[in-house]
Length: 129
Image (cartoon, rainbow, N blue to C red; front, side, top):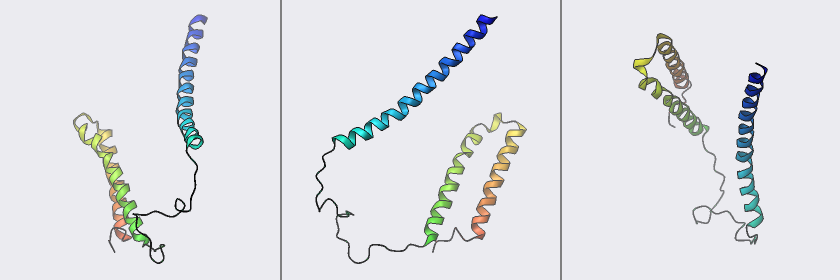
């Protein structure tokens, strides 16, 4: 019986060892690539390379233009609802196999989604200015 506990402990240790190796490699490879790029790239700064490049056209006037915050809010609301609707696809595919709890959970999710939609509508976040 003691031998069985020893084997289970060794198996668990091996699983953690694999996870540690995986995490080490996943951190080391990008770090090595970034360090190698910093060491090997040619460093010949010139005045032309330090200038701002945007579409190849010289900027005229003040380049800092204020945008309405409404554009960013509109984009964020779109992004949030777009990502949340992705969560509805697995529910729709597995609809026939769902239990009552799964259906109630999906209804609760849609209710929360609709609550957020109506809140954004009331705050006029969906109006394009």
